Length: 71
Image (cartoon, rainbow, N blue to C red; front, side, top):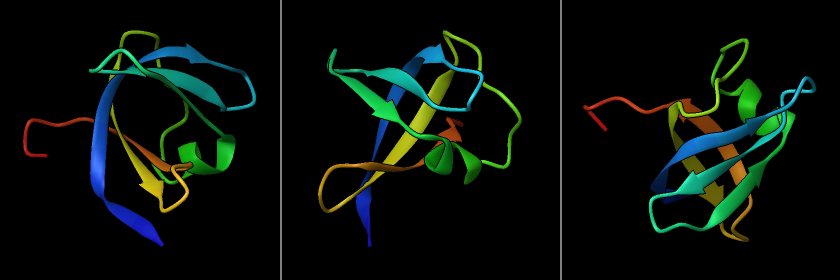
């Protein structure tokens, strides 16, 4: 189950295996795996790119998407 609240952050690390890490606006670092990135449909992310992250009830990132002003 996906949490309704989406967090926003900035990509700090993006690995060749499509996992990575983002720094949230509150300064907390969160990791995401390749499965969460696959939801975006993108091929890669750049460090510094703004993203929206969705978590499950356990707090694990389940979706990473490009942040847009409409979110």
